[in-house]
Length: 241
Ligand code: HPA
Image 1 (cartoon, rainbow, N blue to C red):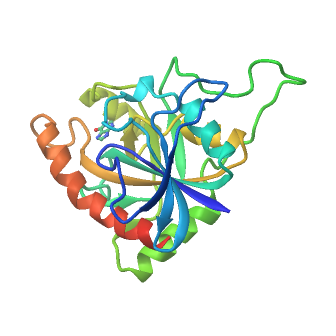
Image 2 (image 1 turned 90 degrees about the horizontal axis):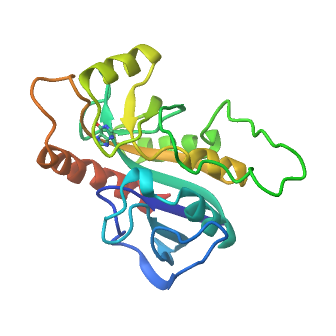
């Protein structure tokens, strides 16, 4: 059983990974974002994929999510930990913190979001009531506790289209909807993993307060600085998983 890590903004490679092979896979849905990095992390076989490519050039709405997930399935992966930068909306979601979300609201549009649309024997509706694997979520949370890494153990992830950040009014609406976090890549990634029966959990690193949550504008410099801090914690967690 192989675990995969999909790295987002701020995580395009894993330093501790002893690389044995970089594998390019062609899928029926086109090319994945980058070569799959196969290797050992802390003695365990893992696969790493840079979601935005390496270098980091593919914006969230242009990522070939179907190819990325299909390729992982083809490699025999059964579990995916998706690392992603997010904005914090509600009080506990402050920059630099890691959150293991438990729910999703999808505001993205126009993305290739399903494997079940052509050559079907029958119309297929997957259950997605609980979009993340509780088993994987609990493992991440328990491990964080052992390592004394501050991890918030739940949150509703709102997925926006990007690549622009949100308006303050959009964030207010998302907060009223029940979102705690805002990111641009959580969907359709999570649903595609479910369609292929892969366990999937997210490790969200809060890069900034979402639009309108503090005075002033959101700068890339602020995002990068907070990500550096949060990704160090995320990496410490991933190395032990
Ligand atoms: N909004 C959406 N995605 C993000 C943000 C944000 O504020 N910060 C990091 N990813």
